[in-house]
Length: 84
Image (cartoon, rainbow, N blue to C red; front, side, top):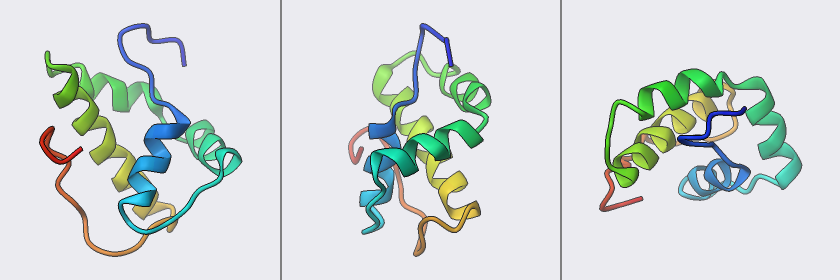
């Protein structure tokens, strides 16, 4: 992805997974990113002006996609800037 305003990283994916007590290797997180519509996630995040709000938005969308792929389980979490 080449969006200069905000870029989703392997670390973002791993942070979300870890909040659900799941560990994803760099390769697994990278493969997940390859299969994810990162532009759509970033587009949603850029509706916010604050970087913390953008990050929270990205983490929520990553969480949703990880649930959909069956890579994490449990309850959805709140990714407000205060908890991210």
